[in-house]
Image 1: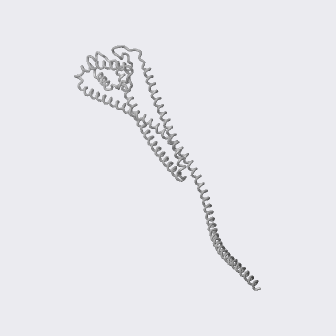
Image 2: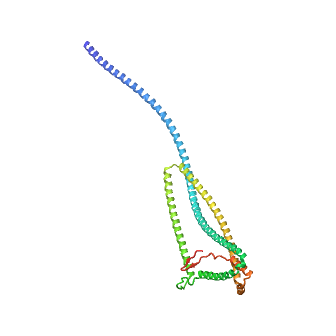
Image 3: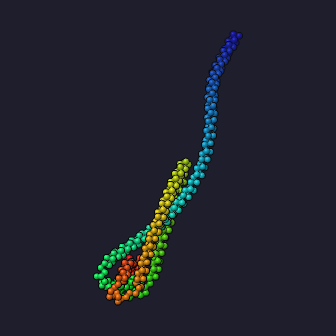
Length: 360
């Protein structure tokens, strides 16, 4: 029994040792489980804190998204307004360019008319200068004749000879004038026939018309070239505008369009002011031209009156016997008057030989 009890005790000790080992293992597992639960609780707290942070971030992100959507809608509306304004500005720019082209054409026509008026004005001034020279010449002749009238008693015989010379010279001048107007024997060493001044005038007119047609054709070619250049510039500006549309933001594009529009409006105002000034200059030149035309008409009327008077004087019969013996005072006065009022040659184009102009 003692051995049996010893064996039982040994078995019990072995069993006790096993149970102690199991208990120790359970305690270790319990401690590990406690540490693990503490770790899990700590992780859970951190996860809860992170979840609250994420919820707060989510709320702020949702608020930011709402604000971004509202801002996007506002930007979309602003972009639509800017595109509409850009289209309006483009239409106004095209209209302003058309108006500018019309104003340029008008300025060109006004400039051409102004140049023509200046040419006419210079011609009228030249005619007036020639008439003044003729008047001075006639006045000097009149003064000379009035001074010579004092010595009439000593110069009667000389006057008689001068009358003959004057009549001869008048006949020569008239014959030369008629020959210049209607040349019959232009070359003195031979006779020429078959002159046709009307044909020459027609040829001259044809040449003038051909020159005008050439000038108009060159002007038309220049205008077409300018139109092509303007179209090319317009296409280049469209390309630049498309590039700027892709590169610049909408506000900067709108501001640049506004600046261009203001510049074009300033240019149009400047051109309108220049056009008005040119119109005033043209009106002044027209008034001066009318004034010169009136003066020329008055001079022509005086000239024709003098010519009629001279023709009347030439048409009266003169008693040659009396004038040869003793020229009367009235005849001398009439002759002096004819000398004083001798008209200048008419200012018109004359031809000689093969149709060359003779300078007045």
